[in-house]
Length: 118
Image (cartoon, rainbow, N blue to C red):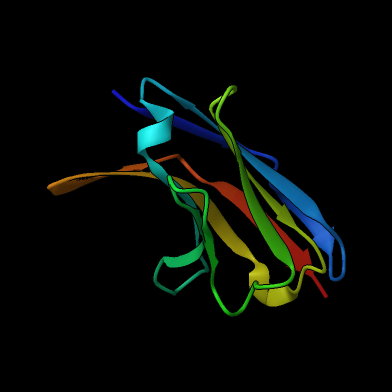
């Protein structure tokens, strides 16, 4: 069973930075698209950033230029560097691993809370 374990969340003031980490295990890391999603209270889970197997990345418009996703294949880690944080970035951040082999298989971590105070 694939395991994804996030860490690095916390409370930060607006304008501050946080770095989230996600440790992946029991998976062929190079075959999975890896990403970060977030869910604010009362809202649906939304895509924040993805790192594709071909090395390309994709960001939500709301975080482009402030957040950076990266992956370390040797360590099977995925990171999200978040700079210039805003109160609207508050939410639970989830690590996602997606394997597409005809069907799509999604795996999720337990989430880590990020709270940005104004």
